[in-house]
Image: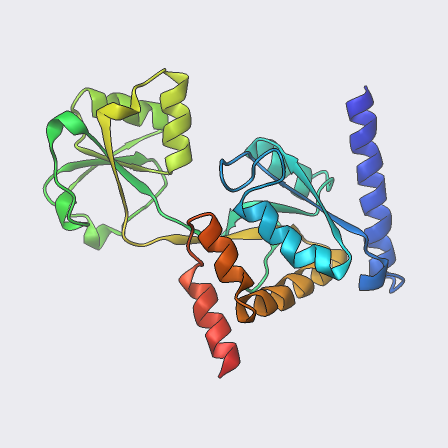
Length: 262
């Protein structure tokens, strides 16, 4: 009951803020905090507030007098809490082509590479996409990792990552392509020994963003995000933060920021 009342209070608070913004009564000086939600991803969204994403978002908003309120929630529930119930202002880790009613800043927060998984005992080489040629390659139905014209292999689709691991273990596919965190979660659920597998990365990554609730208040949040990303980049703080977590600034961010400077 206490948890439900807390969620209702947060919802009502956000609703009042959004209404004030839409009537012109709110501007940046009235905004004291931003609430952002994400699943727990080690090194990115740690529960103690450390991690690349949390630290970057603090560096963006806190110098502007806006305190970051973060929450750790499983993905599907987190998305509903932003888009349907409007408890949180934004979610971290969404793709730009999302079908959810979100709005996005100019700059991505990260780039995600799909993992290519094989059984180590098979000794299959990895020399980029050419290694898939003539093999049986599996990915989740609807992923469309590669367009038809690049599929010189037999595609095997399945509905869950766990099903893909079973196909790989049985030798019914040679390579499996999926998101690393989904593979790790499915393997952990089965107490699977990850030492049995060899991991590589697909050559092309996909940018991931902070997705904001579609509201007038979010327009202010996004404006601050874009401005501060430019400032952090030019002060070298952005590079230092990504290096701290052994991550890479998305190339699209670098390209956009360099274009701004020209």
